[in-house]
Image 1 (spheres, rainbow, N blue to C red):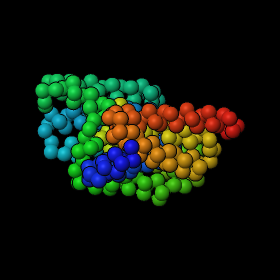
Image 2 (cartoon, rainbow, N blue to C red; image 1 turned 120 degrees about the vertical axis):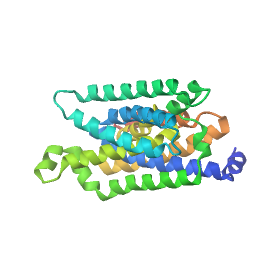
Image 3 (cartoon, rainbow, N blue to C red; image 1 turned 180 degrees about the vertical axis):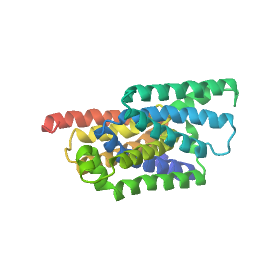
Image 4 (cartoon, rainbow, N blue to C red; image 1 turned 45 degrees about the horizontal axis):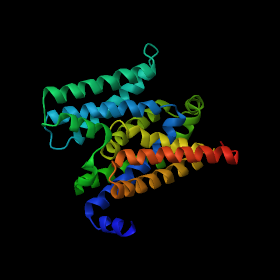
Length: 279
């Protein structure tokens, strides 16, 4: 097994895939702690559906780089979800359901009306659940992922204390003079960026799992914000590395393998937290 992995690691495309997976997982884990604590988890799920619709439209338009279309569309959708969630006339869950389901329907309809390939079902399945595109990344794709991931990490580090205040007590943060709405908007926009990046790793339907599971697992054992953040980051790194290794050795899909490992880690931490009395 070790010799097989060493052989695969000698190929640049495998190293690219591993590097991208680590950066995306780390960014998702940092953001996931905030989203879970603020009960914004479903925003990630809704945005993943929007990203699928945007990707389908970009494919129909035959754009050379779909990401430059998908990024702004998903960010705008994140802003709309945040705004409608605060609208008393439309419940937040209802807004997410409308936008996410509508985006899925529009995307699938566009792919069928304007066929971009002979295998529409295969294209839809690979977009929803991830594909081998992770193993065919170009060097410019890796640099783009690195740049966007570093932006997410930098936002988290620079605004750590402000995000901490808004996450735990938004009312007090407003009273203290913080612009809570602006930081909520920042978090929503960064979430959109992570969702789009995660589509290359696990597909649009599974992208929110990278955000939710590491944070939930860390919360089974740790109670402080910093402890949960650090543990979530380590878990995300471990599951992404081992997920890619297992998918290479066993020939399983990369995205679903990583998500299943996240589920296994959640069960393990839930049991460990209950046994140690921390759960």
